[in-house]
Image (cartoon, rainbow, N blue to C red):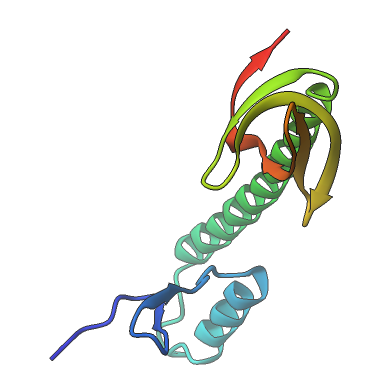
Length: 137
């Protein structure tokens, strides 16, 4: 009998797709309130245990906020790197695009910078930063 991985959904083609299974602030509060609602009134949750759970919740929220800020900083850094390449010669080696030429434009697709590179023979469009292997002065 096959066993599926946690957080993975089967696809029609027989493959699998990962599913985002992160706990959100509302989910945590719902779990905490359910725990309080169904606790044994003769043996309630110990105060220290309850405070520890609240401290964990606060730490979780701080980590979530920091993660969002780091993601924002990475997005800004990607944009800065792409904009700094305008007018410079680059060597591109991607899955479908290969060539050397000058970066003439930067566009953004879903927040991700894409370069337009003019080579001697053609213009490469929608070049990812990860495809740039060499930047020439």
